[in-house]
Image (cartoon, rainbow, N blue to C red):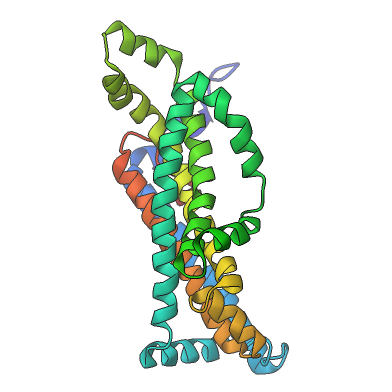
Amino acid sequence: MSLTKTPGTEEGVLVRKPGPQELQPARTHRRRRTLEISLAIAVPVALVLLWQLAAVQGWIDDRIYPAPQTIIEDGWQRAADGDLWPDVWATLKRVLAGYAIGTVAGYVLGLLMGSLSLVRAALEPLLDALYVVPKLALLPIFLNMFGLGEGPQIALVAATVFFFVWISTMAAVLAVPEGHRDAGQVFGASPWQMFRHVLLPASLPAVLVGARIAAGVAVLVIVASESIAASDGLGHLIFDARALFQNDVMFVGIVCVAVLGVVFSELVRIAGRLLTPWAPRDRGRGQS
């Protein structure tokens, strides 16, 4: 859009002329999207190339910071030999199990506390106090409860995810406008109909934002937990390799964790888009 001054008048008249965005919205959007994707790819690629150059030229100690080429070759070899996949699968199954349990529990309780003031008054102070406790501090308790094995790892992820989903769900339900609730009551909606047609559509977008944040945090927590109380998994691989000064293996584990976190968070985001087509698009992704 541009504004021009029409000549021949003393004060002038501003005339609005449509710009490329108004005349060719689809083409403008494609160009912008292409630029954003190009930047998203170019920045990490440039950093990796700089890292490779620094290692080759000796600007950094490649014994401590192996070149990306070395990391890729080692990761490829470990994957081909079948040494990498057991650790990836161990971490993945713990994350998925803990995430599912924590999400369901957090959503149900958040919905109840957002809808019923007495439940919220009874439980919110206790949950607020537990929320500020570092979740890794709960690992010894879970070890005492479940013993060694999968139980403590899954419980720690579930506890972490629970608080993110609970807070986002309760806040989303409380933020539903009173006018929406009043409209449902006017039409004689039952409790189930009020939930199905009012509370759920209005609160679900915010709930899924919390679930997406929890997906990334779940990966962070399981890596820390596996480094302390597990005999397999990517967290164990990373810290065991560091102890043995196998820094190339350590970086292979770090890259796998990064990929796992990105893919998991992206899958949750896509699921959210499919479940809430009425919600505004994520403009941070270049969508309009």
